[in-house]
Structure formats: structure tokens, C-alpha cells
Length: 236
Image (cartoon, rainbow, N blue to C red; front, side):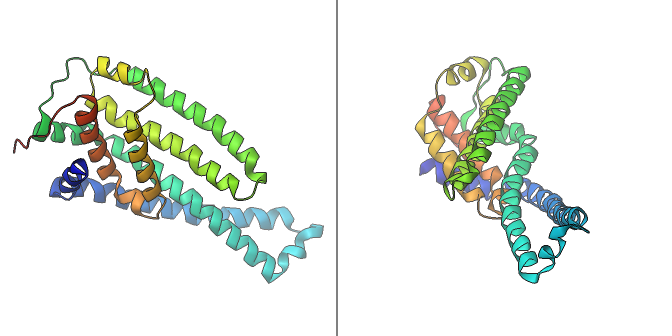
């Protein structure tokens, strides 16, 4: 709770709020355009594919068109939620070094002797994406199981969310030695619980767009205090 209040205090400060608003507006604009054009392309494709076919009369009924619109809206909802989370993560990743630097200067004054190699971060990112694609393929196959498939999909996307968010923060907080040591084992339970809470919040529309900076701040404090065993001292 101490880390939570500390992170919330930082998040509500003027510099970090600015970082939250910019990705929020940019992601919102991109996703609005994505939803609009995807919806339009979807129904244009249906019209062209069925035009003149035997099934065209069936899809001309209002109830069928309503059902298609409803299903596409539900599918679009999940796409928008997940896309918004990962799009904002991508944008925030460019700000993470600055966020970590500001927190380190303010509370910890930790000196990194040897920074984590960019190539190693890149390779781990590709590894996580590859595993995610395999898991997503399995989850798609399991769509035949009602309700269970939705839970599996959430679990698969949570895996990628957890791995990429943690990688983004730790590669900026830790030195090469601590980074390698951390990834020799599975991440501690408190990291998993934290990212699971964050992912759940991100499943609520717009929350995932606005709170990404808070996630980074919280995990930064958590990393300094739980991995490096440092105490937070406000240095100004």
C-alpha cells in the first residue's frame, strides 16, 4: 500500500499527468479511426461477397443485419480494448526511460553500472511475441468451447501484457547483471498480481489508455524496493 500511495502521488503530479494525457488522446484518435474503417470494410465485404448469391435474400432481413451488427460490435469491443492497451503501451515505452529516471532521481539515486543491452531486450520481445502467437492460435482453436474461450483469450493477452510491461520497466531500472538474474527465474508473485490488476483495469474502456503511466510508475517503485531492496527517500 505504501508503494501504491507513493505511485499515486507521483502519477497525480503535473509532469506525469501530461505524459498520461498525450498517449490517451493519440490512442483514442487512432482507435476511433480504426474502428470506423474496420466496421465499414467489414460490411462492404459482406455485401460484395453475398451480392447475387443464393444467401443474399437471407442477409437482407433486418433481424439478420441487426445480429451481424451486434456480433461485430461485440467483437469490435474486444479488439478495441486489447488494441488500446497495447497501442498505449507502445507509446509509453518511449517515455519509460524518462519516467524511471525521474523516479530514481527523486527517491533512490541508484547508479546503473552497466545498462541492459538493447539487443537482449529486442530478442526477449520477439520471444514473448512468438509464444503469444502460438498461444493465440491454440485459443482460437478453442473458440468452439462457449464462454471458456473468452477466459482463455484474456489469459493469452494477459501473458503478453505482463511480459512486455515488465520487460519495459526492468530494462530501464536494472543493470545487466540484475536483469539477467531476474529472468533466470519466474517473476515473483507480487509482480504477477500487480500486472493482473492492471490488465483487469485496462479491460475497462478508456482506463487502459489513461493509466499506463501509473502502471510504469508503480512497477518502477516495486522494482527498486523489491528487487534492489532500496528504500524510497524523497530527495526533492
